[in-house]
Amino acid sequence: MKKVSVLFVCMGNICRSPTAHGVFEDLVARAGLQQHILVDSSGTHAYHVGNSPDPRSQKTAASRGVDLSGQRARQTERKDFDLFDYIVAMDKDNLSNLQFIAPAEGKKKLHLLLDFAPKLGSKEVPDPYYGGSKGFDKVFDLIQGASEALLEHIRREHQL
Image (cartoon, rainbow, N blue to C red; front, side, top):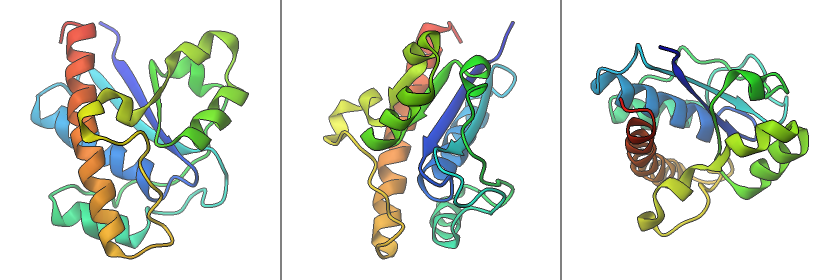
C-alpha cells in the first residue's frame, strides 16, 4: 500500500510549517500510522534553507512534547506536486504562491490547513515570527486542532 503523503507549507519553513510537520508526525505516531503516512514541510521562499526551526517554535513545541530539532528548512519545489498527496498551506498568501507554481494536476492537492477545522473560527494560521511568545502558543493550538481534523479526514478518505 502506498503511503499517504502530506507536505505542510509556510513562507520560510521555520515557524508554522515545521510546527505542523512535528505536530502531525506526533499524531500519526500516536495513532500507529507511521507506516501509512509520510509527513514533510517546506517554505515558498528560500530565506532559511538549511536552518533549524525558529528557537521559539522549538521551545513551544517541546513544552507540548513535540520535538522539531531534527528538521531543516527547505524550499517547496515543483516536483513536490508529484511527490505529495496533500500540500497544506498555512495561509492564503502561501496558498497563492503554491497555486502559481503548481502544475494543473497539482492544484487539486492544495489545501488551507484550517479548512479542515472550521470550528476553530479562523481561516489562516498567523505568522508568529515578528511577535512575542504568545503568538507561538496560539499557532501551536491552531495547528494542533486542525492537524487532528486533517488526520481524521485522511483516515476516512484512505480507510486507515
